[in-house]
Length: 256
Ligand SMILES: O=C(O)C(=O)C[C@H](O)[C@@H](O)CO
Image 1 (cartoon, protein in one colour):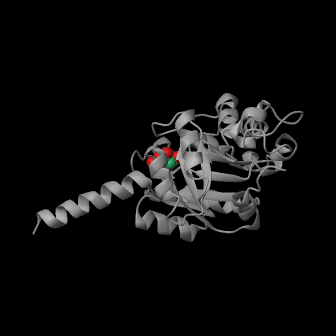
Image 2: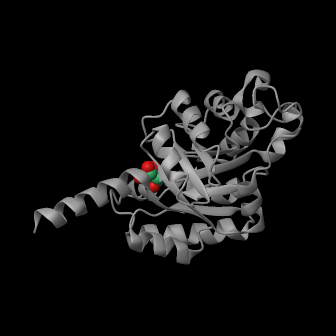
């Protein structure tokens, strides 16, 4: 039995648009609810949410019955956390703050087994192999792992062309919040200068045959990124969905 097919990776390779959502509650039951919504992909955010490897694992379990593909964002691009996420059953890894082609190559190696890669071999007892049931996992997993790197500051943008030449990078996510802050537009990813840089990066990513990705947290921003051609596009964050709905409901009934 081979490793599960990564249909999200295949969709990106076909050029299909994939609509997703960020998950920041760091709670399995919330992931299970989000898994019923109909998104193509869902981010388990290990960078800006109170996630650890156990909660990441538990959210992967919660999404096992969903058609939404789980994307695990690790807190930082380090091999030890990536191998833990992969052994927990993640197949798609999102790495924040990638600033060079060498860093991107290191991340590609981290999601692949030796001799090409550096991923540690501990799958026999891991959830990734269904605890040993997937006998051919180690031999077949590399084709199903998917690497998405985040380019989200001026250094990364300066290295974007070299990053795009790295084989094994499947997609490049532009982080609007971090990019705008690094560009000097703190809290203002809508600044024309930021939007111009994002639009240019999306074109270059697509022209290189990689998938461009973005996250919009307001209708206008999301529509703008959709129109730019973002291929894997997150259209919201679970925490904001609840917070905004709750505030609106309270205001509606308290105003009566
Ligand atoms: O820089 C960004 O924007 C991202 O990487 C997404 C944020 O980290 C996400 O948490 C929304 O603020």
